[in-house]
Image 1 (cartoon, rainbow over the protein chains, first blue to last red):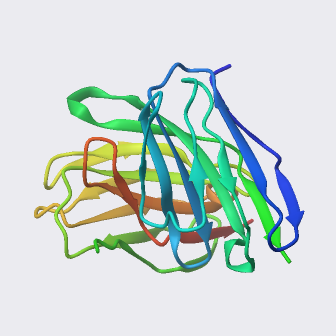
Image 2: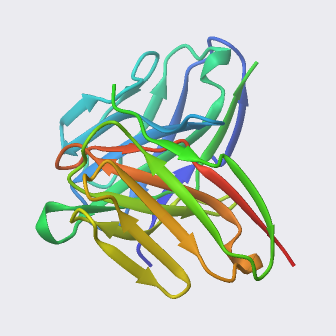
Length: 115
Length: 110
């Protein structure tokens, strides 16, 4: 089954304690990205990756890091989490459609609480 | 900064009613997508509209892209409880870059 898998689904942590949220896709997609979802703000892109070893900042990258060492994996790293990073996080990969458009496949989300 | 505003933000209706959700921006998009997100899940693509004025139908859902490609609407006919969810529009601003709207949370009561 084609899917994007995130872990963990739920995480409660304390301010300053480094954490990693993993993301893996089995569709051989080149493009992957991370979003955070907050009430009334929709989905905002944190980082994206066009391919292995190619990453770039999205709209809200502060406080986050990513890496893309393999095509299937795109972990999100919070070196020193703060309470304002409490949010619902989604990893997504994109597949090409016709005429240059793409379809996003999202993971099930990771609900992060930083206390 | 490009923004996509959706209205209404919340909508609670009875089964069988019709409804329309709007997605508006001051920016032009080369295409626009609609996603539905159910509780505990990630968004799932419903449709992509590309041409100004384009109308696409998906069973009881009708999607329209504005003539100027700055806005879009989603109309649901005879809503059912299974239509409950968060509806998100997303405008394409680059090859892989999409800006997501603020979302409309729909609840259809049986």
